Length: 138
Image (cartoon, rainbow, N blue to C red; front, top):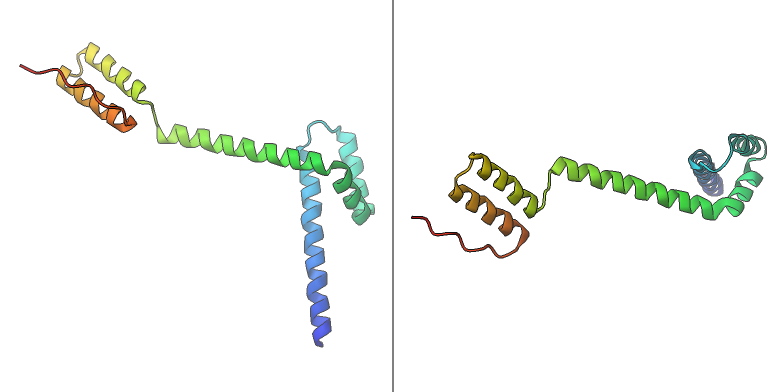
């Protein structure tokens, strides 16, 4: 095997892998497209099997913009799902929620006024808002 055979082997390997990536992207996009009828999806797949290069080229030209839009929507949906999951797991709440919960505990008698003021000051400190001066205790 000489140098040019080696270069040729790597070139055709690259072309084949690039084609497979395009093929999988097209099939993934076909299945992601909810507006396209199942019969049309089957027609596209049949053409991808029997006329692979021409069909892939036609698909990318004819449906390339929609392909990018569907990919962007899928990424945004995944990001939104991830963010909402992180928010639920982290249990983040606003200072107003923390103060309301502490007030409910104060009203039920589970907290003293001093403990309520301490929780309120902590919640306000978390948000960066200036805390109101605590009531003097006697």
